[in-house]
Structures are given as structure tokens and as C-alpha cells.
Image (cartoon, rainbow over all chains, first blue to last red; front, side):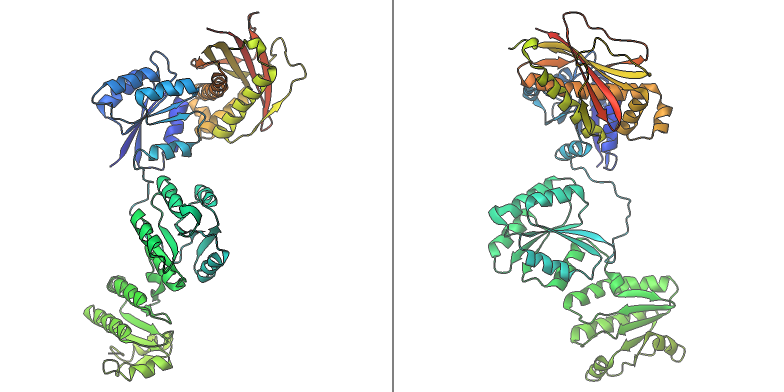
Length: 381
Length: 169
């Protein structure tokens, strides 16, 4: 739904500033240069919010407000006064007639957007359909934690990622940072004094800039009460201390809706390569499994006819991993994609111990695997 | 309620300085600096170049008018900055866009000034803005009006606030 905001101001300059302020949000600005025009537009296509000046020629904003509030069809439209008339007496008089908010000129554009954003669910305009951000794209993470050791642990644990991890110790610093930066994910220690984490969470959710930003709670594993409270108020996720950094990284990637497929799948010349990491945790196997069919289809669609499953980093084989590889082989067979395996000594030896994997043939390098396709139709099968 | 003559000069100076600083920093991200005059109460303002002068009045416990003087080049810069467009784009829109922008800056400045007066016990209302343009004119107050003139430096350009006031209701 596209929201409509009606600006009633005799100054074209103010109407232009308002349009400029909302240009990055999915809303339509209707303009009226006087009260008569404003009432006509409000009747014809009722707006979701009216921004109303006070001092205007012929009929002023107070008269328009009075007319709006006495019209059964228009009285529910929220009105925000946007005026240089800011004396206490004037404000009180106008507030009594019924306004949702009052902004005194001069005003910052982001204050205006913020206040209107409290009335309607303003959403930033995005270039749809946007490509998902990749795990290799930079991102800004904010950690609100008063214990430097935890912050250092997170920064150290994520230093191999392209993410910039900024740490602050207080909620005030966090609000300032979020005001000045586009933050992709926020982690807040739930043990900040005086329930500050929950107060900060509420403040961040009322701000347009962080309304939809994923927010994690950092909490000691045994503090069930805090975890429960965080889930109830709507934290996106919980990370328990002591922190499991690989798990935290995976949670962050999921919360930011990052495309992690590039970690595991790539095209190398005429080969489609599925590379598995040193440690294949259940979440890694699930992640690879989720991408598998789509990635194989994309490869075939782009004219690739050969695949390599690269296990050279894998330290040990287990049943989950074997199942994933069998699924991958089956998927390749369904689309007539030839495949083979690359692997190191220990994994090759382990394969000999299982009935299902005993016949798998491994190559030592990708290049060797590439050469092998000329010799057999499906080398690993 | 005290009479205008009982209000110390320092109050007017502080009030208009705060208004000019707040408006120019909030709307144009430009800090303003108060520049004390050699002769605090000149008879009139002599203009050397073409100027744009915004004026807004206030009526109530005090009646008054405030004129904001700035030369045309600075007025164009302010207008372009306020509207978020280049000076070339502004030139295409013509003088009307500059007038409207300077009128609004004056409205905000006088509004901030008079809101402080209102909160000091002198409730007033604003009038709508108007614009004067030219280089060969001067504004002379009637004898019953109190006049105060203040200058400010904004990014190397000068603006002058000319305050004319007399007791109201």
C-alpha cells in the first residue's frame, strides 16, 4: 500500500523540502498551497497524514484543522503541524483542537520523516527485485556490550568476514551510531544495567532507520528469563555466551538474508565446483543441501556439463555428509551432469570403510579431475 | 508585562542571534557568527549591491517587523542549498524560487525570535512573509518604533537583521 501525505503550506520551498525528505520512502506527496486546496484534496483522495502550516493567507492552518476535526469523513486523518508558530500558548491552543504531532520550523528532514514514520509504516524504496546480498559483501554490525572481552571475542571471531564490527558500551552511543550509519545487524548484551537492552530495543524499533534491522540479544546460556523476555519483545535471535562464533556467523548470515552459496558453489571455467569446508557441521550440510538443486540447474542452464565435488579440505566423513554427497550425485545424474570427486588422504581412506562410498574414485586436484572427464563418462559413478 | 524599553539590549541580541544560528545551521548546515557593529544604532542601512530582503512581522504583545538583508549572490546560494538543487537549476526556476526560499528562511528566523519573546511573556503571532529586491532603497522606521540592527557572518557572507518594534495590545 502506498501511503499519501498531504502537505498544506503556502511556501513552495517548504513543499519542495518535504518532497525531498520523503523521496527515498514509498509514499506519495500531495501538495496544496492553501487551505481551500488542502480541503479539496483531502475530500477527493483522503491522505494518511496531513502536514499543516499555521500562518497562511486568507484561511490559516488553525481554521483548516478545525474544519478537518468537525468533518466526520476527515476527522480521523492524523495531522502534524509543521509551523514556525511555536510559542507555548499557540502550541497548547492548537493541541487542544487535536493534532498528532507538532514540529516547529526550522526542522531537520530526518526528524520530519521520523515523526511521520511513527504514524504510518514508511518503508524505504528498494530497487526490486534486488539481488540478495552475498556473504562476501561488506556489512556493518553494531555490538552493544559493556564487557570489552566479549566485544573483542566477536571482532576476532568474525575478522575473516568482510563485516565491520563496531562496538559501543552504552545505549546512548548505540543510538548515536545508528543515527549516523546504516547498520545491517545489531547485537545487544541483555545484561546491560537496568534493563537497558530492552529500552534500547524499543527505541531502535521506533526509528525508521532501524525498524527492520535484525537485532540479536547476547545472553549467558543459563539466563533463561532474559532469553524468554527477548523472544517475547521480538528480538530477531539470541546468541548465548560462551559464544560459538561459527554458529553466530551462520545466524548473522541468515538474519541478514545473505546468499551464502558462493562459499560452496562456483563455476571454474567449464566446471561446476561444489567445495565443502573443513568442518561440515549439520548447519553447513543443511545450507549446502538447500542450495544444491538450484545451483546444479543454474550450471546446466548456463551450458556446463561437468561437476566436481571438492572435498580436499574435509577432515572427516560422517553419515550426514555421505547422504549429502549421494544426493548431489543423484541430482547430477537427473540432469545428465557428469561428476567426479577431489579429496585428500584421510577422507579417501574413510570412504573405503563404507559400503555406499567404497567405489568412489578421487582425484588429488581440480585440474586432475578436469583432465579425467576426457577419459570416462562419469568417473566417480 | 515589561515595556519594550525595559527589555535590555542583550536580550534582543541573544534572541535574534539564537534564531539566526538555529535556522541557518538546521536548514542549511551553515554556522552563523554574530558580528558586533561599530555603531550599534545606525540611522539606516546603506546598500552597495543588489540585495534580497525578506521581511516577516509579528503582532501581539509586541508589534514588529524583522528584515533580513542579504546580497543576491548569497540569497541564491541559500535558496539552492535549501531546495537541494544546483545554482544552475535554481537559475532556471528564476527569482520567484529565490524569493520564496528567502521568505521561508525569514519566516523561520522571525518565528524562532518571536517564539522566544512569547515564552518570555510577550505572546505574538506571525504575519506572512514578503520580499524586497533592489539596491537603491532604505527602510526608515517611524519615530515611535524601537530599532535594533545586528549583523552575522555566514560562511564569509554577511546578513543583516533589522528589527523594528513597538508596544502592541
